[in-house]
Length: 292
Image 1 (cartoon, helix red, strand yellow):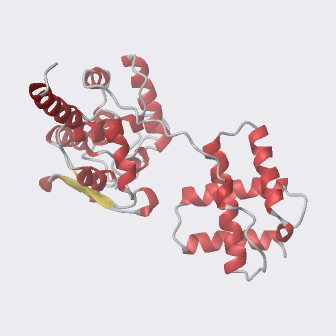
Image 2: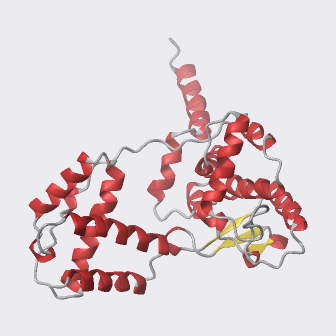
């Protein structure tokens, strides 16, 4: 079959499934690498061919998570050929081909490091951005996409319309985050742009700030404060602090927008003061009963 037609049809199918622009770019890019590497027609690809492709990616020095992204893309492409294009074949990408991934614990800021970081932030816009990440647990992409319509400050909440996986959710705004937002909104009250956070200087002034733009601001403040911090660590910090304040795990899952509770449970392994308090109380009782 014509490989170009097959890839184009696959892209249309992904768009009909309402996949995000980021997902489309990733799948098309990884699939292009696979197609260019292939020396045989796509219908003749076997599990042995896929294993050779994995060896090729490993030799290029790609990390296991990136390689698994390639395999997910290629598997999805062959599922499309089999179920949508009616190509008679067996999917050559077996489930067992995914590489085992390390699962590092989420890194978060210690309590004494948070004031140190925010002391270096002298921009009203940037303070509002990073306050939302710290107090609401927003991802950097979610902050960049916020619009004025998403804010409901009288109710101390905002709406994330298209989070990860295009899932929406409601998050709540703390009093200090609300003050930071109000200060920023006052500074841009004459601007008609609907996107919340805008570039404030240079040739792109007045345009929505990009994800990379926010990340570069964090890199600047990390350097100024001497802290090895990134945007996502603020989200981890929020989850850890809520857990240590005895918030329910399901509540934290809902606020963060996790699809699975297992993802949220990772924070229990980082810094769970509730577990520590329960242990100290219980072990105290044990020592009283069975003193050595």
